[in-house]
Length: 96
Image (cartoon, rainbow, N blue to C red):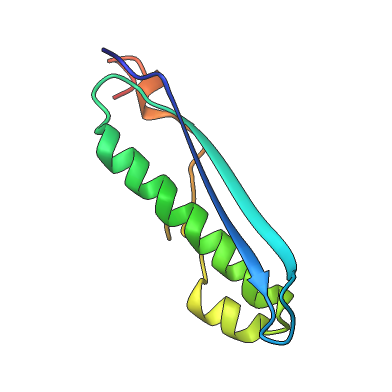
């Protein structure tokens, strides 16, 4: 079996200790194409980490804690090195 696309979603409700009703909800959904040779478990793990970091960042922002959010999640779960705009799976053997 070959998996072509993976979707990961993460959702959190913002609950006040003063009310029984939620204040809001934050959700983040990611899709990724999986190429032959990719480690599916690693792809899923990276998607989960990115989704969770983005949701936790937005929850802190919603609670008025922007500085803490930026300090705890500086890259929002994304790699520290910027994307160079190329997809290694799409390169031909001559380009590699």
